[in-house]
Length: 387
Image (tube, rainbow, N blue to C red):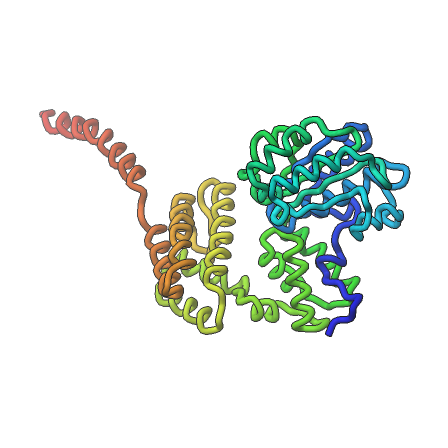
């Protein structure tokens, strides 16, 4: 049983200052400049996929506004006010879960409390997570307060689904779009955590974890935490592959090479091998698409042809058709009853699609040949009529 003081890595290593935020430099820079130039808006909307730092950035912003001697962007995380905000015990930073407090009554209560002056800090800050879960009536009740709040009140909204937020709410906020975090930055952060936690993890294992996380730092840290529980202080790539059903990068490259060469027998054998070892075929299809996309970009950069997929030269058109066939097969692999069969059929269709010629390019070639025929025919006729 874990000790009472144990914290999971995702909480223990949560960003505490602006410098700790990874992969969101555009957001951090804007917020720092706003604080330095005293241009702090009354409402902010943080948009982005899960685990990219929306709520963490909101808390850091609250620390910068309510720290001792603030607002200032370079606050001391050991400041008692900042520590209270991090612990959730600071009276003037109110975090609200939009999913469970989405009714109009809760918003009306909020409208009443905003009128009161801050008890501890300079500002009263409301952080509403998953704000898109608020009902339409709750949104409408919030509009007037959001447009003209008291000078001591700041709103910070966070959402993974901005399309569900009323445009009238969005128009009253400064919107920041947080991006998925690049894998290389996730690897760097995990390597730092591993060093501090005294865990030996190979670069290949970190790359697998970053691939699994899909741009989410929190997901990457949770996966890393689970791997520590599974392996202890020694983590290797095969461990991550076995726990999560991933396929090694070398085998993904080999499978992509069979798609390029059209080796049906080798392709089926590789799929059988992956399925027999319990690998996640849906994830494998996604990884294949990512590799083929890299080949497409390489072909575009090199003037329309690449040998990135197993050394077989492929044109931009062939790779585009290959990628399109893989994309079309996603639904069948994810939702079909026979996952392996659907996966094999998708790959075989992709092979045939890459070998097919586009009808419009064939028409252009035939038209070009037809344009040359009359001139050649005329020259031939003229040569026959000469004595």
